[in-house]
Image (tube, rainbow, N blue to C red):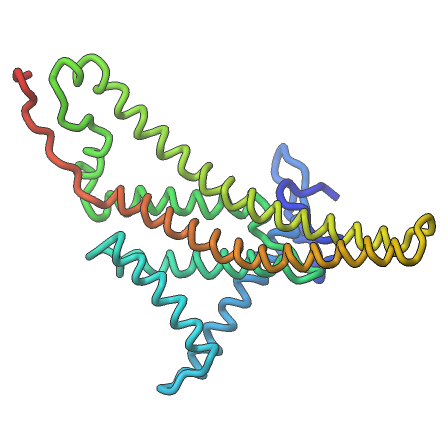
Length: 272
């Protein structure tokens, strides 16, 4: 069984690893991240249908919580996108719910956060990159979007010596770096959470089962490891929420930068 690049899951999983058939020139692989990604998507669809069926004018606690989360994402989107918020909001709500659900799943023993694998995160980051290009062209047209890659207004001597080649290069590099940044930020935080949970669980079992330690000492050490694991669960809950929000907000900012209109270059001092 090929090892999975990415997060370190719990030793026991409720789901089997998803079998990825071998492609030409590549070995077959097994991925727990894919299995739990499907579970996260299934949970979101189930809760969405359940919420729709249970929707009423006097909402309960669950409906209030879901509506509150949606309002936060929508208000953030409106503050960033303005008039274009409605067009992109379904994508960002889906991304936020998937990341939040995936992050929280890893706090349950026997389950794994799909976002603890960089494969999952880079797939979402590439989706954001694709939406950035599509959104920019859709809103501004191809010609208007390509103006982002042109140098801003500057003195003619600076424009034709450095900026004419450096500015497009920096813009292209920024397009490449953004998915990497989104991927590694989310991966690093959730991977650390998964690994710490595994380490403290291993320490608790090791200390409690040790025959070299006396009962009082191994009870203290095992108990301390359990307390630390509970602390990581509480901290991991906060990190899971924050990282889902950070990924979504940064994705909103990247797309908003592509759809905003680029100012027309003005005649610089001294002429061309």
